[in-house]
Length: 244
Image (cartoon, rainbow, N blue to C red; front, side, top):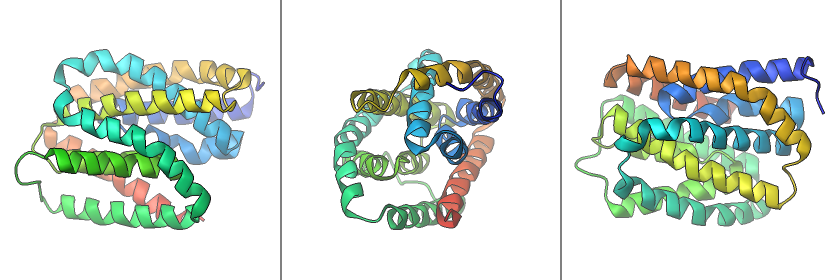
């Protein structure tokens, strides 16, 4: 187990604090903030397990704050089809080159973000067909690359909902996705006592930063929220294209 004072843990704490601010503000983006550094520090499987565990605890902290703003009729079809798509994505991972998939997905996200930044919005309410397709695609991507959030974020941002509703829906989506992922990893034996120890060490930094991110969100306008969300998505897309 890493000691509390080890260099790796302190670096991971810093990344957890930054990721918590981003997620507390936007409702998403924590995994992509942490993933590159944690994978180097602790290996890719342990990075995914650590992020999933922290994600579950973040959801438990944030879900009560946003429960009244969630539109379950809109987000549940996305959640259910995403959960169904995760095993299929894991199968795809075995058949296709994951680096190629990551770059294609990143290019798609980049294109969609640029379209949304022009001011385009989905005409009317997003329907059940779009929600099901978005959820399925998200689950497929999450199972094959571990980063399934961008399609859902783009789908929600393209609609007419306010920042408050979009953020609440995103937090609820990640509550289910992180929980399912963590249970799956535990079933496969990837979650170890060392993983739980690491999560416990990183948790205080995340708790504090989530409150800070939430505090910042309460003082932001819809326009600021969208600019922040687009910035996070652009960073995700560019990182996916540039990372070797």
